[in-house]
Image (cartoon, rainbow, N blue to C red; front, side, top):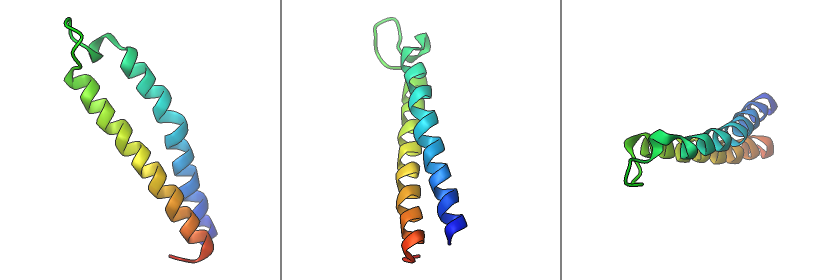
Length: 72
């Protein structure tokens, strides 16, 4: 179970280190808002992807802990 835990923690770390920086770039991208300042589909799609990546990171952390303590 230790290799599984390590894999899950690496996955969580990747998501937590990569996606916030990427999403900051999306927010500052000119395609994120239209000429009236309203968010665009480009922004919405990436916001959903960011949220899903954070949920996957949380689930990976919880599953990694569960694997370490033998709850899986």
